[in-house]
Length: 290
Image (cartoon, rainbow, N blue to C red):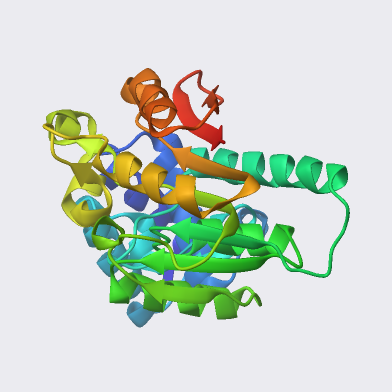
């Protein structure tokens, strides 16, 4: 048996060459809750708390994986997005805070739009293209009750993760295993289409943190420098034909290509294209409507 408090100092110190102290501390407390179901205050109130040799081995295994720059979310197998729990694995991107802003924007616009339209018995439809872990689709299904939500992805592994997360969060989604780049037409009309497609150019790889570059799926991250708007062009063309008259397309975008992406949607035929900044002042999302 060994005291956990002294081990905490060793654990945090060993990670300082890679991350700041605040982040190392946050890792420690995430693991504490995951392995021992204890919070920060619980350990503070029990300074003599001891762990067994087997438990110490678990801690050491996780510490070494962190030193290999593996994301803590993959190590623990879970994360939080829009205050909801999500299971994650290397087949899917780890949900990002900026994507929560996109979800919030969809919910805000959808609610305003609904207040302006007469109610009908027909369920409105929402499609999430490139759903990954299902974080966008599930958060929207949770917050827009009554909306029929569809989740599309090219990766069967990603769709399996999204299915597990939908069940975990108590929502029903309709899943579509499909390559959007090979899709000629969407098979029905949607009131909202939302997507967070790959948008990081190869030339921007140097800006990506090593833990992301080494461990998260490149298929969901990167596009070729020669055609960085490939996914937006295809999604925009499909959405222009598949949106209902009052429907909206929402996308997360590359902050360096905001104006270019907005112009692309205008060229496709969207008459209203709004470019929105995130909390850090970066162009991060677009809403387009006909």
